[in-house]
Image 1 (cartoon, rainbow, N blue to C red):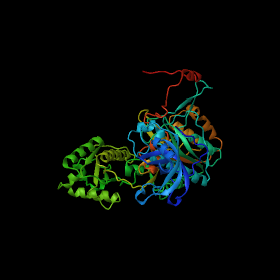
Image 2 (cartoon, helix red, strand yellow; image 1 turned 60 degrees about the vertical axis):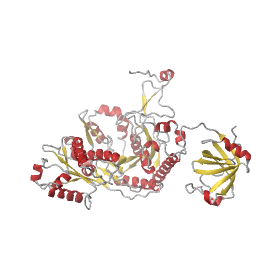
Image 3 (cartoon, rainbow, N blue to C red; image 1 turned 60 degrees about the horizontal axis):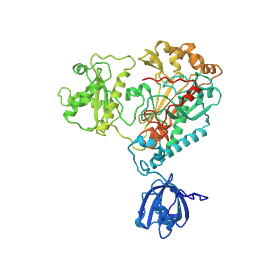
Image 4 (spheres, one colour; image 1 turned 180 degrees about the vertical axis):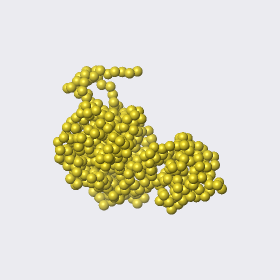
Length: 611
């Protein structure tokens, strides 16, 4: 039979009592984590958010409480009153914060019982994630998940407090707004009052935060909920949270300073220290050095070793002259047998495609004709990568452009991108197979980077048109506008856009915005958007630009991703209380679900079923 709590009150949590509290009478409440029955003595480990305390039920001391303990099972909710006493030296548990004491209970109430759970929250790891998400309320009782939620709370609070101290106002923006497709698909909300019309859930507060700057509020931030109807993976969710901010009259440096400040505060509350200011790198430099716009600075950069080759060597090895010959140093690579080396070379050739060939340095070293070349390549790679030398246990992959390969004029960046992607592909394979390809950072090894000067446009092969690389409200460089490159050379136009990168993961993106209507209309036209289409999609914003819009800029960082890194979690789902699966399903509440015909009729919607 279950008990009523009555007027009893919890005096302490299950994680706060220590040896100095011995002799005090207390009342603890929580869940039964484990139960051990030794006949006259029953031990209950009682758990709450704060920790675990051992409760001892002695038949001789309190027969009634002991009888209640005989009924108790894991996940029962109990209240225990008794006196704190020191454990014997032989029974002290050094793994528990409360391991020096126990409660000799004189009263035990069973406030609620529990079915046998599908898994025990006392377990450290549950392999079946679908079961965890189906019973998320049990999963969230696990200490690991409680720590993740605590990290999220502390980080969010630290960011809020820092931004408030810098003069930012926290301002909420609407969840129900108009659809302005500019990236992923919008989630649409039908209007009952306006048949055939729809609201959209915001992919980001972009236009609203710019409106707030036009409104003279100077500094805005928001821990903003955002929604995107896109295919998911470990680092994506259909609804997510970002740290969103905007400032008037900023230079990029001002935004960098603010972001570095709140990141430093966020890391400090989790016991980590980071150094500021963060290093900077342009987009073009990032591609040439790492082949990707989100470099992991824990790895040595790529380098062009073309100067190590003579004209005769280029000719005899059938390497196209005038194009980069890209060397990649890979730390911690395992040694290979001849058979493995041959298979490895064939795989690189397949992955690199028709333009790049794998130059096997180990084979060159054994060739009298090319041994000196191999030494020069080793030396050039070590020198250009900032290394003392390429150690024997490391592998130096050299990718050479095949004879006849041509490259676009823009600094051959496509070759570096291809080499960078190949490095990532090989890294995944070797990390899976050998665990020794990439250099693993320690807990405090956080390598931040600002990547700047992104291309303003990117070419869309499907539509055969230029489209925006960031978003259409990003300001181009003034020099590129004045030089007329918007019309004459779109590929060369740089955006005043920047990303913040941590250990190869993009944490956030931002930009200085367009604040002049004439420039905004010029951008829309360059994107192939007619004036009528621009007015239809962004009319309210274009109108607002006519009323004294100040220069402004901002950034948005993924809070979920930041917390995931700080918590050491493998997926965003580990740091979100109620996440969706990779198929955008909430297994706990079984959403999405069909709705009744009456509801659809109210919304003037008729479903169309496709086979």
